Image (tube, rainbow, N blue to C red):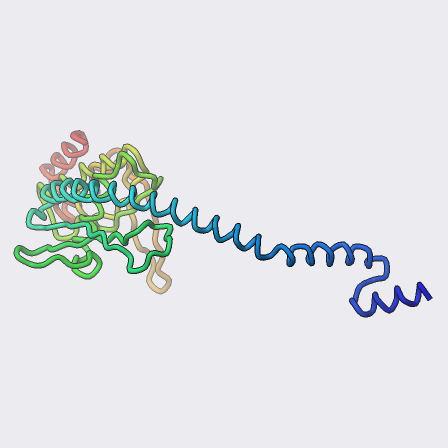
Length: 252
């Protein structure tokens, strides 16, 4: 009779007969937890309230520090943009409080970069206003200003020198070289002033008629001088162009 009862219970609970003892222990533990459910809920609610209070304190402290840092960062970035032929640019960092009071890992507000690239224009979100070249230069200015605390091991700039030349291209090269002291910086450029500032010079060429493929070649010595010369004066290399290229590389 006892065996029959055990097998009946096992079928009822859909377990093996030898698992009934463990099932009994599990059910007893679950029953105890349900009996203490209200006390446990109160403990959880108190812990949740304490955590929310702690978050508000930390979020408020973060907001104060952000307010201090925002104006300093904007000022330093605009000073760098002045060197990049964007002296009329106005950069603002907007701190917009979230509408609800729900704890958020980002803090109590949203951070957005606003910019006006033309005199008298009102600021608007950076990704809506800036052109590709402007966006690259603004990104470069931000990276330069934040270089002391940067955490990115590698930064890639794709034609950051679009639409500029001469002295401004020289400044871009210097700033990129400055960033290269703390991070690995990869730059796609058509400006000789920028290429000359690099520690290494890689030439990208496309070959093939039907199946086109790209080749990457490391340039050193005279080969690099000739390539910088071509970037300066075109396909025909004169002695003066090569001399200028050699001077640029020696000065870097």
